[in-house]
Every structure is written in C-alpha cells, then in structure tokens.
Length: 493
Image 1 (spheres, rainbow, N blue to C red):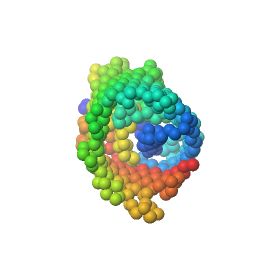
Image 2 (image 1 turned 60 degrees about the vertical axis):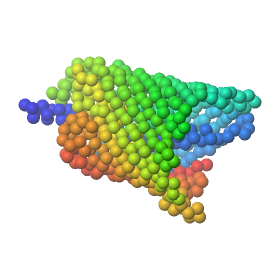
Image 3 (image 1 turned 90 degrees about the vertical axis):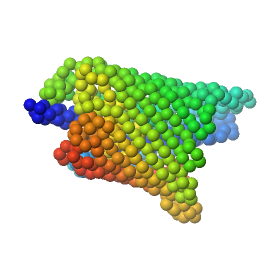
Image 4 (image 1 turned 135 degrees about the horizontal axis):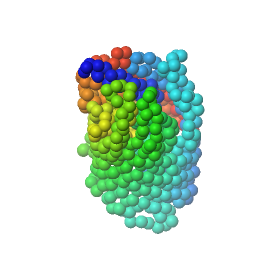
C-alpha cells in the first residue's frame, strides 16, 4: 500500500514539474541576461552619481549593438542553440542639475535552433522579435542638485530624490526583488538616515513568475509592490539597512484546469529584512542580507494520494526565510586579483511537490515554509536553482591576465567560480525536478567568465558553466551533465 502511494506521489510530481522542466531552457537563457541587467543597473546608477554638471542642459545619446550566441543543455544533455542580435538606443537629458530623464529602446531578436526536436522548442513568444521595445524610461528630480543650480543650497545632510518610470529595480541586494518594474521611488536623506519608499508593478512580459503552473506565468504576471527601507550612513565604511516590502497578487483569483484538476491561484506576501554592506579593513569587503517571508496563499489543488484527482483548496499561511552572506578579498596586486566567498540559503517545505507552484504546491492544513520571490541571486549558469530549500556555498577568483598597459590584451579578465548545491531538507523539493529523500547533495557546478575590453567601444564576453549532478537524487534519464555556453560581442556608439 505504501509503495503504491509513493508511486502515485512520484507520478504527481512528474506531472507538476513537467511545466517547469519544459520551460527550464528559456529560464536559463534569461538567467545570463538577468545577470547582465543587474550589472547594467548598477553601472548606470554609478554613472549618474559621478557625472558632474557644468552646464544648464546636458544631452547625451548613443547605443550599443550586441551579437550573442548561446548553447544550452537540459537534464538529458540535449542541446539547443540561441542567437540574439540586440540593439539598444538611449537618450539621456539633464536640466538644471536636478531634473533628469533617461530612455532606452531595445530591439532584440531571438533565433532558436532545437535540432528539430519538438520537446525542446521554446514558446512561440520566445521566437522572433521580443517585446517590449521601450525597455527603460524614467524621470528623476534631485532637490539638492536643482537648488544648487539655482545658486542656492540645502543643508548638506538633507536631500529629496524622486524617480518614476520603467526601470530595472534592485531592492536591497536583490534577494526579494530584482526585476523590470513600473515604479515610483523616493529617497529622503536627513543627516545619516536615508529613507527609501517604493510603489511598483511588475513590467509585463519581462517578468517570469515563481508559480510556473499559472497560465501566463511568463507573459502576464501582475504583482504590485510597496515598501520602505531605512539606510544608516553614520558608521564609516558600513551601510546597514532594514526594510519591509509587501506584494499584492493582481492575478489572484485566476483559474485554470490542469489536466483534469481545476486550480485557483492567489499568493499575497510580504518580506521583512535587514542587511549590510561595507568593508572590514582595507582588503575585505562584505555583504549580508536576511529576509523573512510572510503572507497567505492557496493550498494544492492536486490530491497526492491519487496523482490525478482534485481536492478543495484552502487559504494557507506563509512563513519562510532566506539569507545570503559574502566576503571579497582584494589582493591589490598588479593584476587586481579578487577572491570571493559566499553562501545562499533558503527554507523549503516537504509538504510541497514543487517549491513555487500552486498546482503541486503546499498541502492543505500546513504552513508554507518554501521561500519565493522575484529576486535574483547568482547561482550559476547551467542549473541556476532558486533559493527555496537550497544551501549554496560558492567560491570564486578573478584576475587580469595581461596587466601590462602596452599589451594588446591589457583589459582581459578571467573569473572562475565553483558552486555546491544542497537541499536544506532532503524531503522537500527545489524548483528543479529531483527525487524526494535520499542524499541532500544535488551536485556541483563550475563557471568561467572571460571579459575583454578590446577598445573603448568594443567589448567581448564569454560565459561557460557545467553542472555535474549527484545522479542518485534525479529521476531516470534526468541526471546527465548540463552545460551552458554564451559568447557575445558588444559595440558601443
């Protein structure tokens, strides 16, 4: 009897996770883009902060053209290929030192080659021209900059900055939110205290929901966020912060029949967190963040004892947590060597068949302990698991290969990072299909990055990752090595 129930549960798991497995290739293709988006968002923030204003009106326009090639393997080592020409055109304007506008158009084309396999074919929307064309556009008012341009001044410890539009928003260190958003953000600085407030909504087709069983999870995700963060700048070299963030599901009440099982979707949650960034002496840089997730969701619509029949859904409480910590050692040598150590951990729930879905989600009469968010933390290229039920330590090193200023490859930089993936609870699922029970070890991954600024306008990037699984935790024919390869060339004009 027990064996029969176990077979039915495993059958239900295979049914549930087939949705996520079928879309995993597209998620991996988007994963490297999310990393580049995060780097781009940080670069733009630093650029605007350091740009001096010498005239009343400043205009800047330009663009980039990137041509990239991806090779992606699934859990059976089957390969598919993606080619992406990508043109971005931007306009930046600044008036009176405190009124700023930035807009960027993006023309991206996806060309997939699946070797004729229907099983590997992406969604129709992933092929051809991609939306939206208007990628980023926002306006900002900086009270201190504007007042200074009018021959006035504010107290040095006071400022107000308001920004609104469509942007790539990173909240904290990205653990709970790192995504394209329509957002209004305000920053009020009083002395050493800075208060940030946001009101934001997910930006349509650029959002991939954590609930991959919901119809339109990658084309029509509408979640509204409101939150506040307190940053303290009174400790030299340290930037501690605390925050609260609430999410309201605008797709709540949506219904669908999966197989023969009617399912209703609703997931309203919040996060309370704290963290800090800073330095520990001259050579050590650290980062840390902890988030507690709370709220309400709907229980599983699938009866695990049958594997195909429905059961009444109930409103269920969410109580989950996740955290990260990292330490970077700067050797300060002529090749700018850096050693980075980090760890990511998130809670999971053994009463789920999948870590993030409603269909196959939390069983009735149980609190949901699986951590879910629209955040992004780098967990590699080839497997890229979400934080739910994951313990992921990593170690990496990066260095310039030829630092000689006269060398033709003086801006060539190599990085290598190793990841170890483990389940916090071996009975609970992660967002990748695995067997329940058995070993906690999922496997390991080695990633390599190569970045070369050939000239001031031409940049070359290469990304490679190989995941080496512990085959005992995967189902039959699902435990092969997985590789990811990306190569791209960017021209800025």
